[in-house]
Image 1: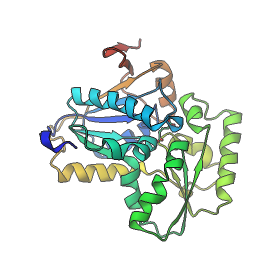
Image 2 (image 1 turned 90 degrees about the horizontal axis):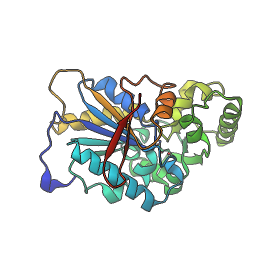
Image 3 (image 1 turned 135 degrees about the vertical axis):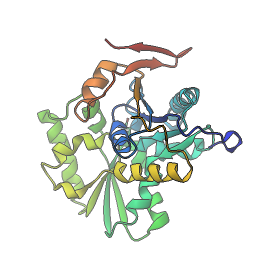
Image 4 (image 1 turned 60 degrees about the vertical axis):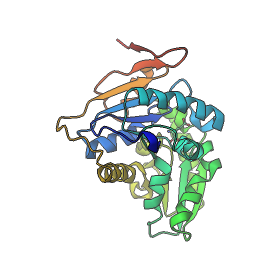
Length: 280
Ligand code: DGL
């Protein structure tokens, strides 16, 4: 955070950002334990998937979205995306006037405490290539062998509501088989889209095998906001707003396979000026 402008309003909203519906898996967990918080969710659906984008592209998209969060007066922004947390967090972490919570760095602290020797990570190309999970976990525990596997089709499957198609199930089963050859004791769902696929994954491996890092991430956010006196004390139920950069109707349909949105998403793009359109 930019310490020169360190005057944050504890009753201001929290921003959440991802390339699409994936960040909803984080939002849901945060809302469960922080029900009074207001939030603004941005799904950058026009640029999805983030996993194949360059660092420069991700910096450009993120800068526009973070400026929007600044205009909205957010006190904190949750990077509900492993790919941007892995590739650009270190570059942008001090640039904006709010707290920034990246999922990988926070989750690694907890993952490093697991009493295991072999940990698998399913993630996007960008996250695997960055080596962020093995690097971050090794900061706290050098005895866990971390091996990553890139799942090229999974984000597309989730974004397009194809989870229970025969072909998708086959793809997911095959990727899981490859992972299981490494004999992991646990597998981290290292992309926020992947918890949408738990219904399929658990057809082929026990539920206890999979770790959704968002559970501990949400606890970390709560603890940190509390320590910084940034918890919303207005005692009313938090409100939410959803924005996407393309195709609000598809976002709504895909989101519904995980949670019900209490409000329709609005289209918001940053070309020239900010424009918003609600879907009917
Ligand atoms: N859900 C994001 C992540 O956690 C981005 C996935 C993508 O768009 O490739 O990595």
